[in-house]
Structure formats: C-alpha cells, structure tokens
Length: 280
Image (cartoon, rainbow, N blue to C red; front, side, top):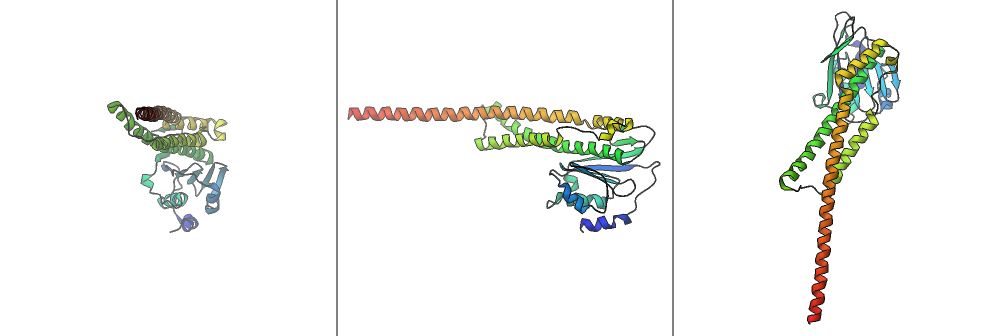
C-alpha cells in the first residue's frame, strides 16, 4: 500500500489525547543514506510542517504526534502508529526496502511530571510542545547516527585487527596494495561523513533562551553520551589510520626491496654476460 494512501487517511487513526499519566513512545532510526528534504516536503503535504531548516523538517501529525526528518539519514517519531512509521521509513529508504529491526535505532518512553529527568530508556518532561519535541528528536537523531558510525568504525577496526594479528604471528600480512587503498579510502570517507554531518552537535536555538529546554538538552546529551561517543569514534578512526599507514609503509618497503633485488639480479646478469663474452 502506498504511503500517500496512509497519509491521506491518517486523520482517521485514533490517537490518545490525554496527557495526564500518559506515556508516549519515541523511536529514532538511521537509514544509512542522505535524505532529500525537498522530496519529503512534496510527499508529506498532509502533515503540518511546524519547523524547517536546510537540514531538517519537523511535522506535527495530530495532537502529540511528531515526525522529524534529518538530512543526514535520521528519522524520529513521537507517538506515531506503527503503520505510519513503516510507511514513512520505507518511503525515505527509497528503492532499498527498509527492515526496521535491522536499522540502527534508539527507543525512549516519554512521561509527564513537574520535573525534567532523562534516564535509561525514559524521558520525563513537563509538557510536550513543538520546541520540546524538536529538542528530544534532534538529540535522538544525532545519537542514532552515531550508532551507525560506531558500527562502521567497529567493522573497520575488526578487519584491521586481523592483519595486525597476522603481523604479530608471522611478521607479515596478506594484504595487497589495492586492498590497502580501499581500507584507507573507507577510513577517510567515514571521517569525512562524520565531519560533514556531525561536525557540530547543535542544540535548537530556543534551548539557549529557555531554562527548561536547555536543561532537557543537557540531560539528553549526557544520557546518550553523544560527545563521548563522537570522541571515541574519532580516536578509533585515528588508530585505524595509524595502523593502515604502518601497513602501507611495510608494503612500500616490501615493493622497494623487491625492486632492489630485481635491479641487483639484472646487474649480475649483465656482469655474467660480459664475463662470458670475454671468455669466448
């Protein structure tokens, strides 16, 4: 069933309207691809666009339900029906059919109280409005994107570790110059993607002028370990790059030694040929 059909008929879905003692579910996914926001705006006309910038779109669907789309590949939902979540994610994934269970994800439960608290799996707020939703969803979008980068960095590190162990055991490793260039290319591309998409862990502008929003933003960043995880990724990529540079130097030395032996053999061949000619 096409997403447009669900968007048009979304008004018919029942959404709980009572905030007292209500718990709302919020979930974030990372699609591992950039999202063209202009295409999203054309498709999501049935939703109310409450905030937008060059890097994100924030929609309010009905009552306390929100959809947040970040251009670097994250999409976050607050209090949305499963059918809407599936249709939106599949639409944003494009030709690649998205299996939700296989995507990097973050899930939190939102409850209401007189104090603001963020704990493992739960967010406690005073009220839910556009600014509060934006603050929560931006942090979850960053967190789930970091999760994707952590997975890719771990994969690169594991592959590099294989060759490090080979070098430790045998004093050599089975890695060609082409494979080395591919590893270096993956590492550099990953660093560039992080720098392009997450170079600044920004907060909503309103958070700077509102104590409650600033407090919520700080507690979310602290609970999600956004800054520390980003630093951890950078450190891991630097270690991987150092290892690859060492491997590359060893390969260069190996090929230089081979060329030296080829030159020596050619010189010896010439010497032997000259000696034979004189003897004859």
